[in-house]
Length: 311
Image 1 (tube, rainbow, N blue to C red):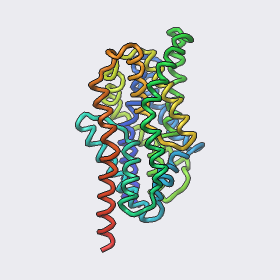
Image 2: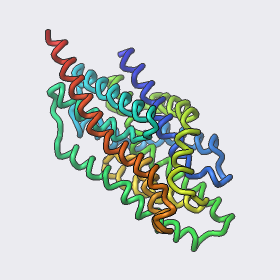
Image 3: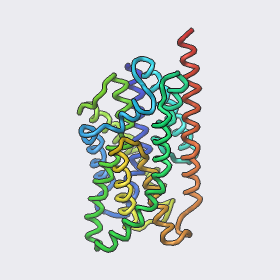
Image 4: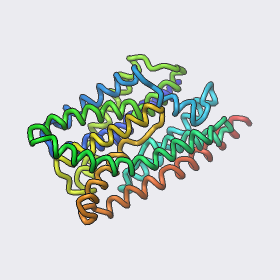
């Protein structure tokens, strides 16, 4: 159990590095909430929201593949290692990707490789919703931008930024942030999420986010489009609404994918030339590679480990 808990801690740190900076990136051009203030709100949401709902965490541990007992914990370990390997490799080569996609692929592959029951229908549904999330974000963000432009002045925009940021943090904690919770609860052999566990997850996530803010934040706040303050608030709010809707049905969706899709949608709405398509294509290619790579790696590793342990 000690090694599984250590791996769960590493997973939370890497999740913070991968997701934290991206979530706070869109508000960089508004001085309303400095990165540390935004991070404090995000960490608090990660600690507290799972106390009210952990539907998505159950999707990771029960609905994709049945992960119970020693075999289930071993399969989860393989899935986490495979997901981390794929994400860190792509990040090393400048291809930021979705850790949610990676863990979904890792869980599916590990379940198949270990011979555990895998729910093909649930996997297909999660993938379909995950693929749709960037496109939904691309549609929602321009609509939100027009609505905010009609409702706000510069002062009002700052207030909307706080509201959008708070909604974004709640949405993340209720949805793909729960992948960390799933890993921890399985390592501990628990079914619920008591406050001490969620607090540990949140603190580790926050530490990782401090490391990831500069790099991930730069990719989303500058390299996709030359965003205006209004764009950041619109992308935050539109993505949050999209992801909260998915959380209500227990479907894990990548917030970073939704935000990136929202920014691309905002740029395209003002003319396709405003989107830096080279960066957008690079990010999309990483998303496409993440799922099959993590699934294959986890399946091979789980099968090999099962054969070794059966000798």
